[in-house]
Image (cartoon, rainbow, N blue to C red; front, side, top):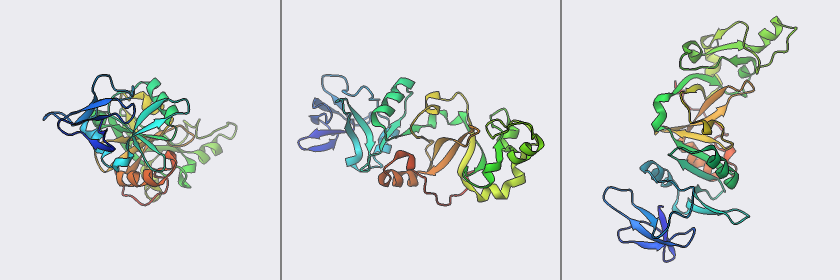
Length: 280
């Protein structure tokens, strides 16, 4: 833990420090060795929150992006169950920053417990398995309505460059069939270069991607998931449209940090767009 109660204050660990756990009231001792991240530990029992994980420098850095009053906030359910959120903003959004692996059961439990939750996961360990491909126009744009993209994967370099079918054209050529974007897998194939200018004009940060050997629990998450690869942009995992195409959306970290402090719903983060440069 980063913070413990020392007297009436919540303080960071200091050499020789003793305090109380803000969640359970148990005695805490400061751990401040020269080769460890300074932290508080329960003196005579395991951590009172079963969702606790060893804190990394990455984890601590994320917490330090927020005011102290937003960090390690105890959250109590109507049935009395208590857990300590990594970050909880004044508007009620809970941010859980996750470095280690997580089971489906624990993810589902946390999502049900907090409700208004957003995940930020440390992507540095799997960056080499995460390929980001061609631009996509914003899914609500006019040009996107008539396009079904071929799913890009690492072995499918053609699709990785951007291949698509035109829905209206295939419906016209096959009038005896019921064709939707969800079922469209045939017809004349076009390349991104055919509509490059229109796509760039309608671009709002969306890209195709392929995650080789993914941590599947994040693909099934009910709450928004953002991947942090350690630069100025986060990647939000999304489904592009009714074709069920996986995509990512670049969100400036500064935009994320602003929005979680002013929006009241985790799903509203980064929904008010401003122009950003293309990433590829």
